[in-house]
Length: 198
Image 1 (tube, helix red, strand yellow):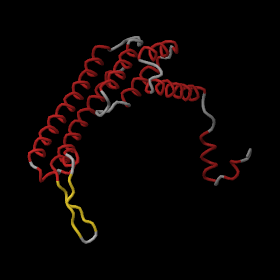
Image 2 (cartoon, one colour):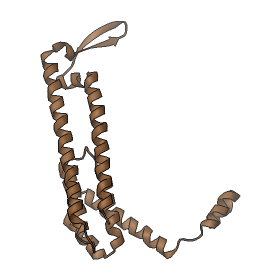
Image 3 (cartoon, helix red, strand yellow):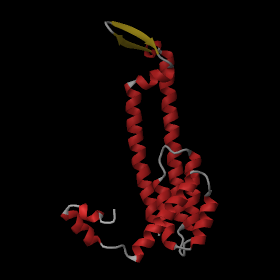
Image 4 (cartoon, one colour):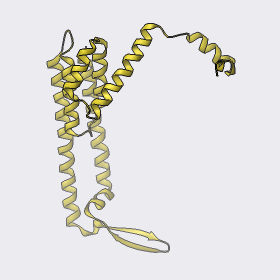
């Protein structure tokens, strides 16, 4: 096992030789990255809260970790995240911002609030559209029936209101367009927050 490099093809051995050993700076960055992954994992799993994240990063005293931690929190956000999960990440990002030598807290907070507002609009519009389609399905019992082929016969199957809604092409089109439009805005806001992080 000691001479595993000898079993490599010549091209791979050449590339390995060119890579050489990691510099001390590269080793430190890798160690920092591993610490950060572990720390954020604890945060996502609820083992520490925003204050615990803040205390740990403050104790580390490594300014280089702060921005990277904030980017990790931002990248873990999605439009479909639960509101409390978005708030938890928001609190973490803002807490970390206060640890910086030159915090940009007000601009970061303003953009994080826009993300929160966008998510609320996304959910409200979805609920309103679902309610309209549900009313239409409840008024038209034919929409709650689906033809299913069983061998040589065609059988009518009764659907629940929720099942019927999922079968309606207009609902599928709405979901697709709604998701596309809001996700585009969401990505733009995340990029805006990243631009405010120094």
